[in-house]
Length: 158
Image (cartoon, rainbow, N blue to C red; front, top):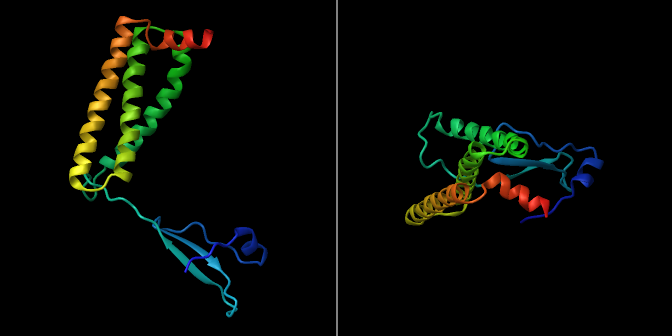
């Protein structure tokens, strides 16, 4: 049986909800029961996908997470640099960084929503193909056309 409890109605009665727990797989909420004077705890289980490639005790997942955050910060810094000093180095750096950022992001979507061994292999192959075509297309655009920086500047100027 499920019920929806407004947090404000629970907090007005003097009951403090417990939001922060040591486990990330359970989300407890303290709700007063009508028949009891003591509140009891409701716990909802949250699905967590398993790490498919990282072994136990491996730092690969942590290093990957850190690399994703570093790349996001680098992309934030590359915006002003690309605006003030556009050039081929920035164009190709943007092509690589944007492709890698998109590849990692879509890889996480596939990890969360694609299930079954054959489907995962097909989805990863499709993602690799998409990322390869994206990077090749951006490099082609940088070499044979005005480049990413000047193309964005032209879009903003009109």
